[in-house]
Length: 113
Image (cartoon, rainbow, N blue to C red; front, side):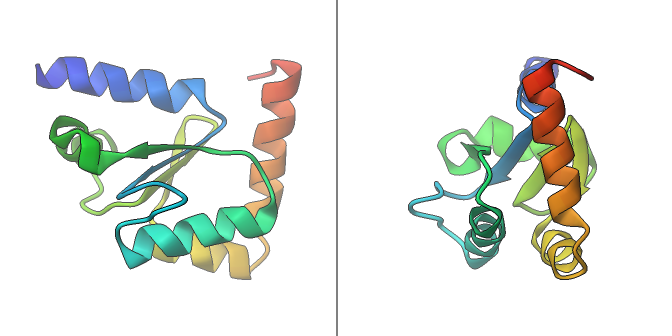
């Protein structure tokens, strides 16, 4: 079953240009770190997808194995693990996040990899 979860996570990560594994939903984040991460992406005004790890304990544990990262939230852009809340906030503060996000969205619209 663990391999099935990892395959499901891999499919989700590759399907969406921007994917955030978080606790709760964007409207109702269930932890401060998830809320802060959503706040950064909302400030960019870009579309993103989320997965509420509280709804599925197997995904909650599987995502930690998938990324080899122990905490949630986890942000994936263009199928690549970027980091958690602190890394996202730091990249945003340095102006590094927005160009990465815009490129991911542009490429997904044109079908480029």
